[in-house]
Image (cartoon, rainbow, N blue to C red; front, side):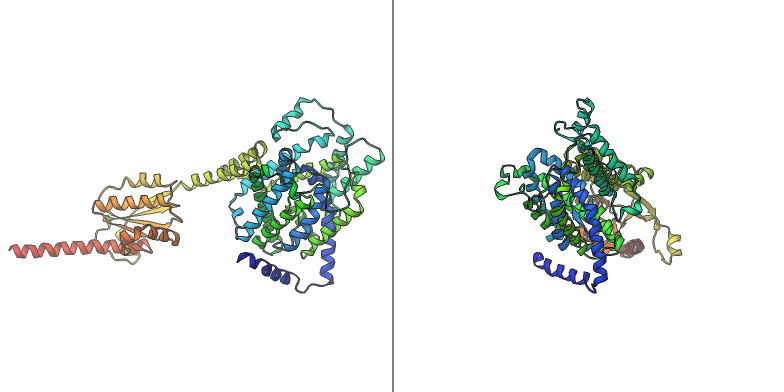
Length: 569
């Protein structure tokens, strides 16, 4: 049924987006689309190479992603294409399984992302802590930079099993840098760093750097590796075909596909969240995932690599005045025109120049504001999660890094949540009277216990240890108002406490149950066994009920004694 609602929802979104559309808005979309294309062109070429594919594959990816994902996405401001984070995943995959493995994993990831959207699971990625995302992003930045050292230096070193081994290889110094390539890389880096920010929105420094470096290489006839032939088509000769799918490796490709799906979903929805704050327009997260899924299913059959929404290009689109998703479509049309007309020129761009673009991009993609906040504020758990995820991303497989980062965050959360507080509050008759409650019995026979935090397997030991000190004959009121949740271990602890105290002739009352806690206690039969007449909204109500019960018992005891005395007399 959900699948049947996708198109009607999308049509409704289009109608709202283009209501009141006119020539003035079109001019804004047109200029923004052309500007974004200028930013996307060098990045698409660079990320295509960085993914273990070709510059042409990156260009095809940007073109198709802009058309398919941009047209069907969950907001008009999203611009999708190849990204640095995705290229870090793909380069490892390409080295192990070749381009067929990259394409097949991309299709599998597209199916997974599509299903996330269809089944309304777009909010799942929100459970990944920001420190883990920052560590993962920084780790990817390191991978991208190390992966481009060959092109920066104009050398070719042997492949390595992971990024750290690759980095160590360079310290053998068994290679001779190509000074011309190194100079071109430095030239692009300097142009990007010193190009005024106010000009960057209209003419990006990355594109200027590529133009200058290419002109220098051609005019000086420098002997440096170049991009090579760019096919004047979006249907590449090297592409995924049904006959080229590596069926024997499908099971091995599932985890890489899961990494691509997780990364694509996270990056797209984070981009939508950031852009949504800037525009005030909320991203339709499930529709965005459906579009991302469809795009990534289709793109490999044209020879492209997996794509996702990109914060850099999206922000350029908005700052350049883009209003609707036509900005994404125009950006793709401009890139297609560049591929058809400028392919001979693009083919002469030095790989060292692309490496310079990627080096600066890797530096800038770090979440520096988030990192400074984590370390300046000395959030120890966040620092640990950040550093661990960064190291795992660089040293291990990216799938393992994601799992490790989330696992560490879960353990940190459990540890922090396990610091439950239990406060004993003897009832004061004077305080009750001051608050307007008149007690009939001895207030010293009632003890209120306030529990703060979740009552689950991580806190039950504290709960049991503290409550072992409950000596005497006081009735107990458990105030659970600040307990957001309980699990089966917490339920068992409450049941054991009730059984123990009731066995001593003491009564237990519950107060301040939140809806989730109340529902769980009812399903476990705790409330039924205890009796609903011992469950109250506030601790005061429970105190008065306990006092009334004690007073009634005392009165009945006295009456019984009097009757017995008369009968004996």
